[in-house]
Length: 627
Image 1 (cartoon, rainbow, N blue to C red):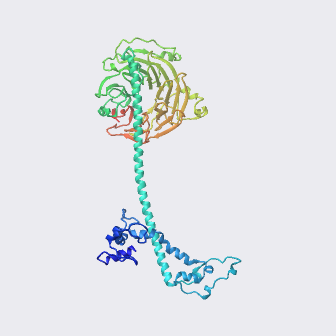
Image 2: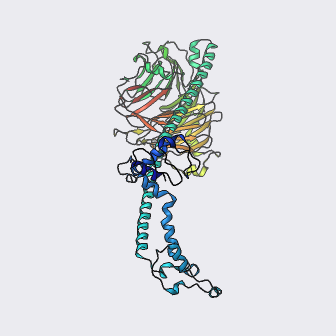
Image 3: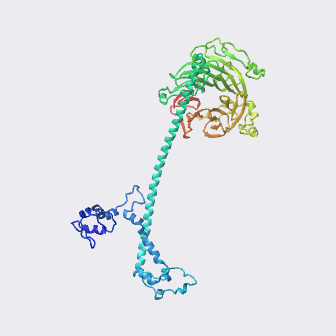
């Protein structure tokens, strides 16, 4: 009715419409003021409705705008989409189904002809006869196709052909619309995935910030405890010598922007060891040129040298103004870095610093214990930086770690020694070869498996030497440091050795109570905390062990041997035989490399506190990084 009214209004300039019979003619103004019931329910008809009715044909003929150049629904008009999706689009299919599939005997041709209203032609008179009900008593007559009993006229066939083409077109339209909706949903899913990834990254950043705050808070507590302990000490020097090694002060990230960073042309040969007390503090570096230098990190200038070792220094640890070094000459030296600038050579091997000599006891076969000492202590007659010399290892010292007055060292003689720094006395010796031949019964691995396992096929305990895999620059060397790293916490000691094993020792008994197997080459570095042990080796891998289970939780593979590492709750920093420094994010599981303005040859050693990193490489330089 609205369509008729709209078409009629176009032919009448007065904008009046031809009302149905029984209704007077009304114009738009009248329709807008008075409610009407035009067989459309109780809804109020306004002039706006009639204006829309006038534009119906034009609106329905408009094409749907297609955002995609080759979109499937681009050629579908609003009218076609509407007609293809409304229930009336199935009327033709329903009519054809009723026409062709009928029970001819039951319905009868006459009745069907009446319903078709003259559209059916042909048919015999016999077909109009009604079936005798008595014929259906035994069995039901099968349903027949109407086409087998009635001949359809050409008009009906043309109509059905047109309907079928229209139905096929409707299917195409519906398919196009559905595909367009699927594409739209797919685009929304992609957009939502991007948003989700961004939110996940934000969560990871918040987690890292939380871990950083926890670590800073722990450092603050340790600093407070250290200050309280230092305040109760007799003198600042005594407190520095006996102070507990800390993870570092809690520096705000913004403070690192002012830290000096760059390159120190430290040595004339590759770096073998380095350590520093804290940012803005003192750095000690050693190289194959047999020089041990002390640097001021605030100015980047050399402030002195530590002379005394007959050979290169292979390991060291710095804590405030105290430094302990282990050399290829088999000795361990304790230094006071506040005296490093004094030009005094009396601290050499021929000088008179306080010495504890264990060589006589070793030759006589006496066991080193807390109740026995070899040699006699001589009072120091010099004010040089060397405070004490510890002798006892028969080969080069390759690893050491100390806290308070307790020091543990490892050497190429395949032993670990525990020292009392206040007396210079060796209180315990742990033999790695004995531990290898007597696996602990409480180990996660059986004695048979440990005895039969051959980590290094050509391993010989008497004369250990292992060729390192080539570094990134193609160089290689013979690795002879049987003990790669040691660290202890309380009575718990962890060591990594040349047989590829990570051993956990009880320093109260001197026995190894657990062995972690997994590395297939010598272990060169390790570190542990309350829950994890992280170790690296010449098998080009870093393994993260769970102390509670003794199993490997993560294994990081690299292209070159791992020579040094450190880790905290957020990251693992490692020297992996390349010019760049590898950083593994334990939160996001992503790898990154520090290469900008970095080393020109593979990195050998590194040490970092908070976000301040110092590295030494085979290019004879020391690099200072602000992470």
